[in-house]
Length: 133
Image (cartoon, rainbow, N blue to C red; front, top):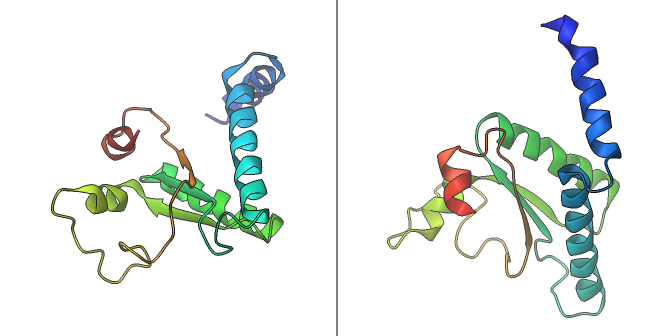
């Protein structure tokens, strides 16, 4: 309900202000991992076109991840960010992988070695993101 928006926003702001809150801890960890990845890339230890951040999820969480990937790529031109459905990633990880025909993701299309992976799930219980974690 629209009347609940101010309270929901207040709760989000309070959560981010908590020094030891889970959102701040997650953001800090993600930032450190991406910075370390970019330092390795700058040192020449990682190919320039290798994926730095892989964002995955399904349904609405995937939509959010795709938008985040687009925003990050616009803001940080040297950061290679990709978003892909967690179902597609599961398809690649099977004992008998399913071909990802017609998609940019396939076994050798993206260099994903040691990429930072962000799994987004609103509920934390969606099958494919949970299976990847």
